[in-house]
Amino acid sequence: MQQNNGTFVGEVNCLNCGRTLGEALRSADTGRLRLRPAAHQPEPLVELVDRHTLRCRHCLGRAFIEPVLSRDVAPEAAAAGSTRSVAGAA
Image (cartoon, rainbow, N blue to C red; front, side):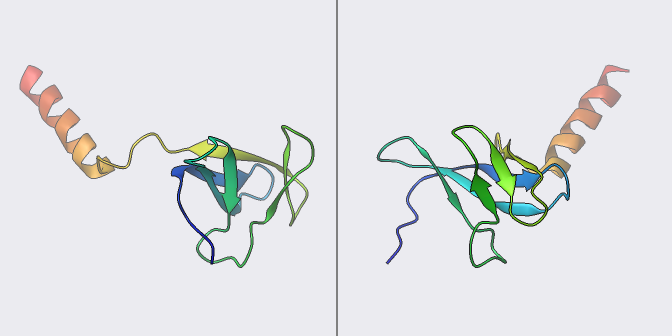
């Protein structure tokens, strides 16, 4: 049975083909990054070539982790708040 403990860091994407290759999690125990498949995949479509390079298994392009800074504020709410403050300042 696989444990899913860890903090979500971001999505792993390919620079070449633009696919979502998986998700990156920071392990709560060791602090190391782990890769898990995206929701629609049986396994992560990314491989670690050396200590610092991720590659897409589909097109062999370079992959990167796109960090997620916050999930607390919806984009619509942030945009609505900034529009009101600009309108109020005028």
